Length: 382
Ligand code: GLA
Image (cartoon, rainbow, N blue to C red; front, top):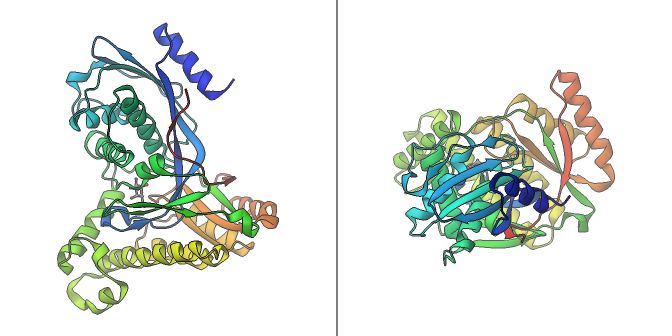
């Protein structure tokens, strides 16, 4: 059965009726530009073919009911009662978006929402933004809202910041809503200007391989927020609105005002911004194979300066590089999730075997290794 049929069938089982529509939004992989989004910097994510589907129908009584084919039934409540602190668990994502859209002036009716997602949760592929993107587009369509896709992405981010309680940037939601097939989204997180950059690796006999370490993370807790605070602290000390406003040379010259740890955190962000810009230049010039060193330098920066890698991610990167990858890096928020490798298509099998062997030798859980190609963002399926 098509996934759209399956989610509509589950919707019918719960509600006894047909949904008004079915919408989908994808998970994402970030090619490069990590922890730069909340520093007003640059990111370059692309959407992948794992997605969240939602079947949604309007209700006349102002009530909100949510089910997930993976997570079960959420407590029912009235649209009027939605507020930060009122919802928790998985439904904080869809209901947080409903709340943020209501705050943005959308007259949201009561809704029945059935969710079906194959984006792994906590795996660094942004299952949350996929769900937020699908719900945001569904609500916008059902209310004939004039909000732009960027505004819908901001509603998703606000849901996550204020309802879920995770201090994330806007990259994932923008990728879920704005991605185009065959392209990465080059996003300036200050102006929110998004440009599609061609990412046709197959043309160069290359492939994008993901290594899912199956180590999960939770951004709502701990380290993500700590990194964000370090960056904000660095910007304050350097007297700039955000680390976006500092170049690597300026940071080198800034000398002693920063303590060593804050300085390393800042160095990751300012060098990472430079790497994103260089990567975009290379992609636009059709020099895909040459982005490899950028990816690898990004990983070293996250491992040593930002300190958000973990042994499994480092092993994935080392093993793929030793087996002939052109470049490799952890992708996403860190502390688990996936590594991305740009690999010669001909060497794919060999590389996959090498990673599996390296994980087994280290005593790690077997990773999942699979190819990804850039796909398109949120859309209505029916
Ligand atoms: C998570 C967040 C994003 C971004 C990345 C790191 O995916 O949701 O906003 O900060 O981490 O680049």
